[in-house]
Length: 184
Image 1 (cartoon, helix red, strand yellow):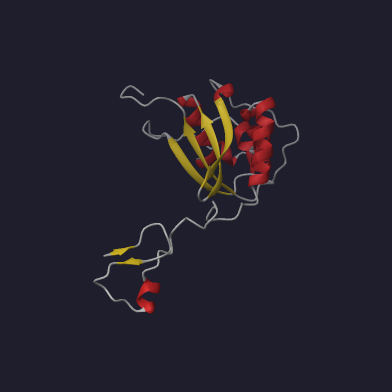
Image 2 (cartoon, rainbow, N blue to C red; image 1 turned 90 degrees about the horizontal axis):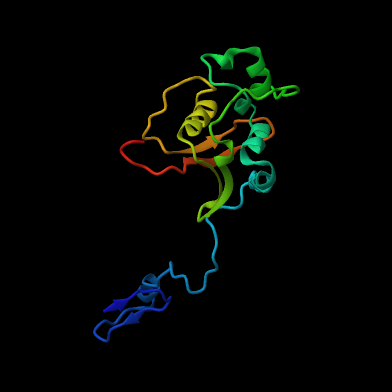
């Protein structure tokens, strides 16, 4: 019998006479005994920015920090608002001088920002406690502030892309922190 458990050595029962080449073949190359804890990916360049945003969110609130990074969070949810000159200037051209927030949330203090450590690297996570606030975030980021119906069953969104001036890329997750039930 051949044991290819967690060690790199191969233990062979006496009934088998294996060549050195075959013993080499049976070496467990996935053993963790001599490996250090690591991730599959190098740290993404945007993580340093998100670490700063996360620290700032602890004092100023996550929604306020996100509004500064993502101009679309300053616009109300309205049909075809993304075609207005103010929206184009703010979101697409980065002209945010004098921009006032018109997006009202039920629970802005219920929004949290954290960096989750995963085997694939660090991932920014935006937690949103209120269901209607979650829907507004999805409408802002995915549907350009248009009042598109978001399914009630949607409780999370993995995102990747370029959504704001000054942030080269975003790979992260939005999710609701509400309890799931048949009434939600």
